[in-house]
Amino acid sequence: MVEHRSHPGAQSAEPPSRVKLTGTVHLPPGTQRPWTLFTPRGEQRWAAGWEPHFPVPAEDDSEPGTVFRTSHGGRDVTWVVCDRVTGRSIRYARVTEGQDAGSVTVTLDHGGHAAVVSYDLTALSPAGAAHLAEFARGYPGYLRHWEQAIAAERGA
Picture (cartoon, helix red, strand yellow):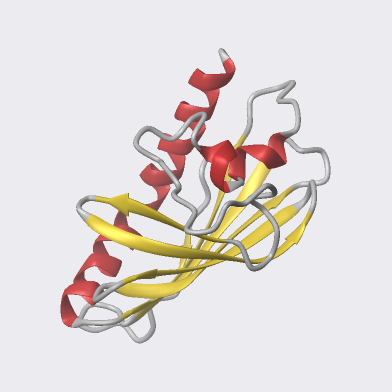
C-alpha cells in the first residue's frame, strides 16, 4: 500500500511551484540490509536505467558531500548526499537544471519493513511547475513501481 500526501500550495488553476510528497514503500519480508537499497549504487540493483556517475571517485557513496549525476528522460540530474544516519535514513539534494530543485529523503521504519520516501521540490520554470503537477498526480504509482521493482529484485 502506498500512502500519499501532497502540499502543492493554494489550490488554483496554476501548476504548483512547490510540492511536498510523502509516501511509504513496503519492503519484501526478510529484506537484508534494506537501507542499502536507497544508496546511489544500491538503487542500481532494482531501478532500471539508474546509473549514478561520480565526478570524483566515491568509496562510500552515502557519505555526506558525495556528488553524483544521473539522467532521467533526457534530463541530467545532479545529486548531493546531504545527510545520513547509516542503516536508517539518507537525504539528498537534487537539481534538474531548468526544471526543479529540492530534496529527497528516505527513512526506514524501525523494523526495516518499509521506507518513507519524501520529495520536497520547487519548480525552476513554468515547464518545471507543470512537471511537478504531473509528478504529484503520479506519486502513488511511482512508489508502487518502486515496491514492485524491489520485490522483483529480491525474488519476492
